[in-house]
Length: 237
Image (cartoon, rainbow, N blue to C red):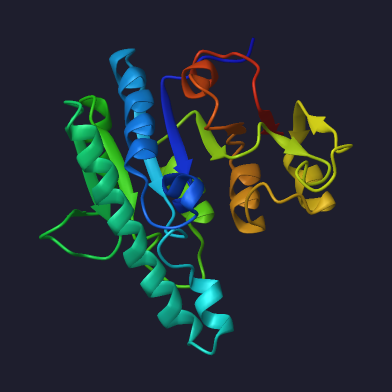
């Protein structure tokens, strides 16, 4: 058994909200994610969330089509806020108190990001969703997740994916790829494994913040991770 966790940061990709369509927001998928998060809060777990925006707009993709990279990244940040509001609505329909904090000020939609206020929300049992990345271009939502997890004093960063852990190669491409139960930050960087971007991994390594990579599509996976069951892959020192 692994450690049980009291305060966690969940990193959701934008694609996770899109379901099989690959773009937009799938309401059934959104509802399922909200239900799992609700179960965690009822169990006393404090949950912070960072959501990507790839289901709506991906900054790097826009840059490769001739768009200025900074402009594309700002558009990507706005896309994350759309996802944050959708997730907030899904949670609040399940009577889960939720706050969205944005790194880019937009007071009509979200609170501005204030660290101490976010921590206080968590202490009161509210789910806090962080939008607009770190508020600057050239930083991914993976890096945002690592940064916010450390600022919130989370015990672990939960990276929700479509596969059940970290593999030597993409298991969808090579069926012979083998899965890591545990792996170090340095091995991830040296092997070039696509767990998170190198900046995020380095931040976690420097601050000894463990990462668990798991399959969000597996029913009850989130609760299993929180309760210390050995699913997915643990990335640590």
